[in-house]
Each structure stands twice: as C-alpha cells, then as structure tokens.
Length: 174
Image (cartoon, rainbow, N blue to C red; front, top):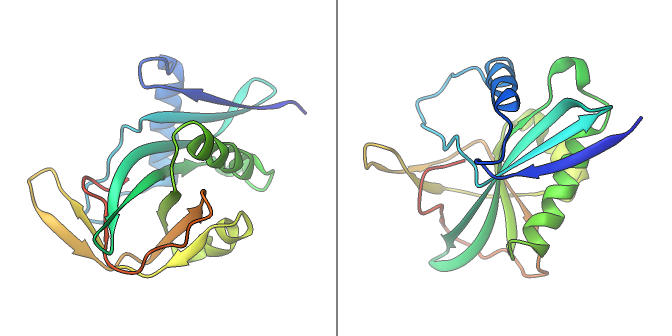
C-alpha cells in the first residue's frame, strides 16, 4: 500500500479536504469542555493511503515561555484518524514526518501537544514525554487562563533539556 504525507498551508489546502476534516472533527472531537482551541494551524499535515485521506494533524508555530524563558515550539493539534483507518500506523507516520518538519524546516526546539490519558502510550512510543503543568493560554475574550490540563507532552527536537516551570503558550491553545 502506498502511503504519502503531504504538507499544506491554509491557502493551499484543497477545499474538499477541508470538508473532510470538518466531518472527521465531529467524530474525533466531541466538544465537551469550555476551552476555545485554535482551529487554524500554520501547517496542515495530511496522510493518504492509495490517494485516499486517512489521517490528519495540524502544526502550529509559536514562541512560548517555559519557566520564564522563551522556547520555540512546534505545536501539534487536531490529530485525527477516522475509526475505520485506526491501527494501521497512519497517525504515527504523520507524527514522525511532522517532527522532522518542525525540527528541520521550522527550527522548533520542542514539539508540544495536549492529549488525554488514554493516548500517553501511543505518543510515548514515538518519543513524546509527559511534562507537568500548569499551562497558561489566552482565550478569545482576552481571558488569560492557567489550567491543569490532563496530559501535556513534549518532543525534544534540538537536544535541549525541557525547562522547569509554568508553560505559557502566549496565545490560544492548539
């Protein structure tokens, strides 16, 4: 089976793929919280198998602050694989390609994602490490929130140790 990972900017993302992602989002992310997340990533990462979309994730570029020090982050958000395509390695392939992209093209020092406890093992097998919060982020109404999100994970991309302290995303969460 032929598997390809494609990177798109918002402007280059085919309209038909945008419609597919909206449908996937309703299945993969039922809205059960009161946090507004950033929904428009800087980069869209689409995995295709035999030319059919099978998995997706977004990459966000940002300089955040950790322990009061600036840190170049590559944020991973909206990792989606519809149920019928799970367990075939498509998300893993996309995450590995995204890590190389964040390191080599974006110059990110760390990848950062927020997930639930059930996915710690999945991301851990790909080198992601759990870090303590709290995490601070903004909301559209201007509120500055600090939260103890269930699981915050980082991926070292530049050989640097993760700093201790409050994680400030300096913007909306992804």
